Each structure stands twice: as structure tokens, then as C-alpha cells.
Picture (cartoon, rainbow, N blue to C red):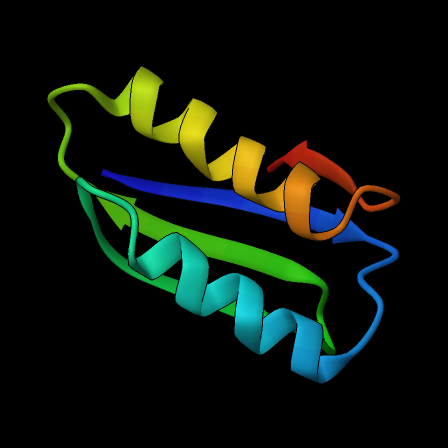
Length: 73
């Protein structure tokens, strides 16, 4: 299952890369892409347990970029 989010006020391209790597490392996530220029996050995960995976992804975003606003697309 693919999920997309708008990342408002992500700090820099390096932060985007670190965020992408952290999300990719989560259990259940099969791929993740953070586009700094478009300020978008797209990740794919197993459909089973998607709610918990989504919570984990959002927790990583909040931990790494506390001032960033994450909005579902």
C-alpha cells in the first residue's frame, strides 16, 4: 500500500535523506522516498498493519523534524 504526505518546512536536503533512510529502516516499510524540492514523502508498506506502520512513520518524522508539519495527500 502506498501512502503520500506533504512535508511543510523540511529543513534541508540532508535532513530529507536522513528521514528517508530512517523510514526505510522501519519494520513493514518496503520503500520510502523523500523529495526535498517537492517537500513530499511517499512510502510503501505491507497492507497488514498499515495503521501501526503509519504511526511509526509519523513518529519518526516528528522526532527528526519537530517543526515540520506532515499532511496526508
